[in-house]
Image (cartoon, rainbow, N blue to C red; front, side):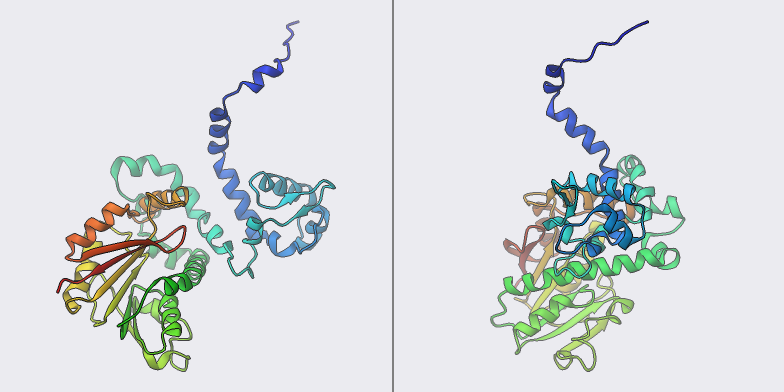
Length: 350
């Protein structure tokens, strides 16, 4: 009979850290799935301020205790929840962000980035890299947003909640960053539900604003901006596609997190502003970047997901400056809004 001698401890101790890291990376899907499961189950909402056992949480969540313990143990390895010495589980800063009622909640972002279609798309990344194009139509027989609104209503709801959460959280930071001295009218181009515009108007009571986005989007604008809202008398809501036309005159145009299409669409949008704006008008472009930012692991992942689902891309500083310059804008200061966003000051030539 053949016997196998145990490997000496020194062999394990000499295992390169890079090999362990690679093993963790190739199991990245397990980590994403664990976060998604916790978000869908509502684990963070069920766990209060005091530590709880897996059995107590399982009773509250109507799950089996042992699998729930395994889920919590896996998440604890990444700092999402922590297992205490007595075997109970407690919140961490990260797990608190999975609570739906947290002011900095990332629950819907976590769900959006792990929606069912993502598990179909990621294995085709090599095909997208070869072709440089989205693989979504090949997977589902239609474009990404068409699929969302026609076939994946729950996913569309998650997308809307995720985008709203992200916009609300960054709106106050944008309002704090921008100096509106001398500005009478602000236009939020492709501004979604208008959270940035609302924050600016609340901070600057003498400023008026215009929100432009697709008809279905502006129909659900921030209640402060709609008829009867606290800011409605100072706001004009314009349904439209900024890639086709921007019939808006303003002193300051804000373009936030929408220049993720192909270069032609980006240039068309910026060019539409240059065409309609008065000489000297300010244009502030706010985007996630894939270079020179603390959030590169997150933004480069988003960049790859954009390639898969819509054939889009995130910008580097240089590429965004190039697009703005090519559209006819004068580019000035570039400033961080937060760890995820940079603001590019531009102006229409005098």
